[in-house]
Amino acid sequence: ASGLRLILGDQLNAQHSWFSSVSDEVVYVLMEVRQETDYVLHHAQKIIAIFAAMRAFAASLREAGHRVHYLTIDDPANRHAITDNLLWLAQHYQAPSFAYQEPDEWRLDQHLAEFARTSLPGEMCSSEHFYTARAEVGEFFSTRKQWLMESFYRSMRVKHEILIDALGKPEGGAWNFDHDNRKAWPGLPWEPQDARPQHDHQALWATIQAAGVKSFGEPSAQYFRWPLDRQEALEQLDHFIEFALPHFGEFQDAMSSKAWRLFHSLLSFALNVKMLNPREVVAAAREAYRARGLSLASVEGFIRQIIGWREYVRGVYWHRMPGYTENNFFEHELTLPGWFWNGETKMRCLQTAITQSLQQAHAHHIQRLMVIGNFSLLAGLHPHELHQWYLGIYIDAFEWVEVPNTMGMSQFADGGQLATKPYVSSAAYVDRMSDYCKGCAYNKKKRLGDDACPFNALYWDFHARHQDKLGRNPRLAIVYKQLRQMGEEDLAAIRQQARIWQAQLETI
Ligand code: FAD
Image 1 (spheres, helix red, strand yellow):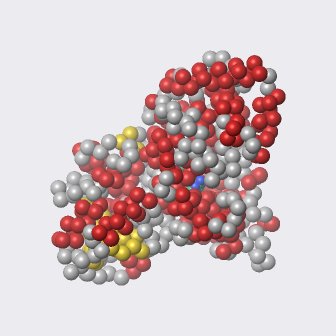
Image 2: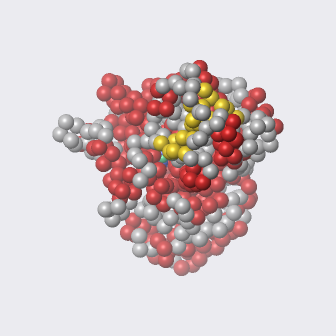
Image 3: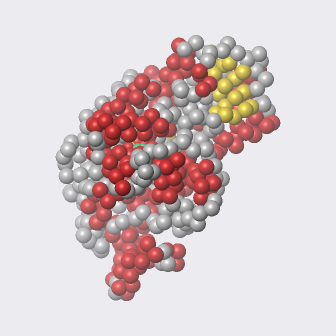
């Protein structure tokens, strides 16, 4: 009899203790199933990347002498549901039980726990990836009044002794350098050359299509530049540390139609499928600070994303699930306009960010938050629909990280459990942080009229229509003061204009 060990598509962690010894008694199981391709409409690159990385991972296990049973999407024996496959594989190998690593998604976690209880005895172990255990963030905040990323982040710095000096104080005398990290990009220095790998995935793509899997977005090799194994991921990490990290902090919030990637790492896919461990990413950034004297603002800003935000949102997810995806604090009901799937809107900021997302399966944080998310919230799009769109389109989108970012940070659909105020702005912010407004069909300065930038009327209307829910938020005192100072007629005209935009979303 053999033991089965299940490896999910986002558990490609070659350093997991499972693999430290080779045994004929163990069969590793990986499977490409419709259950996982079809729960939401995915970007083509996301399906290709996950399957290709799974295949490469299985090959490396075999090479190291492990036994592997790999079910491809077109294998006639494939039942296309994880547990159905496990049942017949258990029979096939006469395995009395199976083992699995903690799934990162609530749905799969429940599903496998139930299956292990009722059908095939199973044991769950750690995925040996994150700094924190699932419940750790929740426990941290159980004795605190408010959930604040910053207080969790500081505790992580201390606990893991990251950028902490000999006296136990934060390196450089401050916990963060956010004020240095809000620059627009003037056009120089130029973004690093795209050194990511290229792959010929035509055969795999043909198989996926022949299996009837539906998808959207650009599949062509020209845009498909994701690391598919650990070696490629490590090379990408090195390249980022050398060429982009030095400017990461400064231009973290900047956007440009000339440089889509700017100084971001593009490491989220490799991290989220666990090809890279967050500790080695943090170690590489610390080493660059120590040995090459990189600016603390860049290194600290980057490390905060990894040990702060990434771990924090995971903790939020496990604390709030189930039910977090159903939140709709503002009761927003509008359906997503068709241009979310083809980028064809006259608003240049949205057109750029969405077209890029369709081509690259990637957009950086401020594009996701302050262009696409900002517009969606101001316009009143349904947060659950939007969540499904984000979960489908981005190469790095897995529910544990996508849901708190979309429902919590971006849409405030949880009523402020994650963010202290909605992340919204009028056209002025987008114009300050990007070159998107230049050449746009709409006028960034105007609030009224067919050629006014829709962000402006929608911004004031959003605050006016949700005064009962937001009016007492101290962080919005200035906004509401400005609203009160606005003449009644002016406000009525702005709100009328916002109704027009909401009615014309398809053609905006
Ligand atoms: P960099 O800017 O180089 O940052 C480095 C790393 O820090 C990232 O790879 C990521 O692991 C981590 N990180 C940065 N910001 C966050 C954050 N807010 N939450 C968690 N980790 C963070 N990130 C995902 O990994 N998957 C998602 O599905 C996802 N959905 C998002 C949806 C919305 C609406 C928003 C506003 C943000 C979302 N993010 C998501 C967070 C962030 O936008 C991406 O992690 C980042 O753009 C990935 O690109 P990068 O690797 O170049 O990141």
